Image 1 (tube, rainbow, N blue to C red):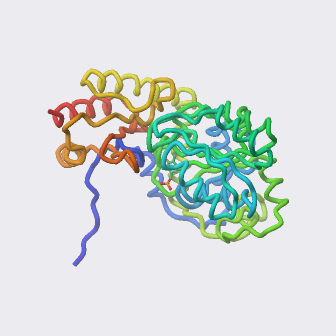
Image 2: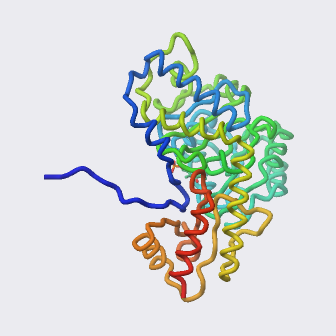
Image 3: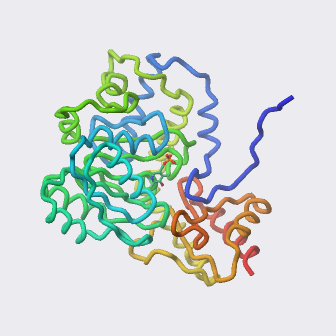
Length: 371
Ligand SMILES: *Cc1c(COP(=O)(O)O)cnc(C)c1O
């Protein structure tokens, strides 16, 4: 007979999920209640308020989509992009490529701004793209490119889009809670994130937020949103209207307890303190890695504290090292994606994983596994 699944105890220092603190796991083990229960409705309101704090926004339409980060991405694109809409899409890694794929599938007309993998998005190229395409309605870019460890200047990019009267969609799956993010101050219109990166919750929820301008655009659509599940007009009845909430889908109740706890933890620590902790742990890890002769992929000015990508030294079998880290040290780090497969490692310092003992443990384990 099949027996219960007992997962091995791991230390998660890859590109996500990050270590989930016991407090969050405990919260998730509390009894399930109905998704229209007044107590659950209260919880939803608290989650929305705390997400506004995390995104630094006043947007009323801020909530977690009941699915992973990729679903938050789809929600942004299927609602905001109508067939024929021109969208400037920045691609400097895997996740920018996924944005492009979304624009195409929505029938949008993409204008691609390419930058090298490992580099930040070049604001000058974006400006040039708007000049060449004054009819572009939207700009889409990834704030924190987890595939490479590069961070782009969201403030500069948001300003350019506003100058040209375009809306901005930003992927902040890896930036939320880990690195400075000011949605309103930067004038970003739609964002999506994930529960399992710097919030250190379990995977499966995607916090999103939409500005009034974004909502106006959605309301002015002339075509129906092709996805039923992600159509904001329908989801709104469930997440938005306190008092007379209507059934849309059954929210994942217990994961929502977990997200609530993760946000309480973030509030307790303080958002700016959380950003500072990620930065401090990154500095310590960097000193250790560089002391071992390892080199960063991304130049210092664009480096993400929470995702450290380093080149695999010449002659080292990267997969064998990762396997040994996992089997002997119970330590997970990430491999390279796409063009960087086999060439880099990605060491995550996300959320609860961004702590001194993890940094020390990771450096010690790597030292043992490298020749
Ligand atoms: C992880 C990640 C996603 C996808 O999130 P899932 O929860 O895996 O669907 C999207 N964008 C970026 C930048 C990510 O790091």
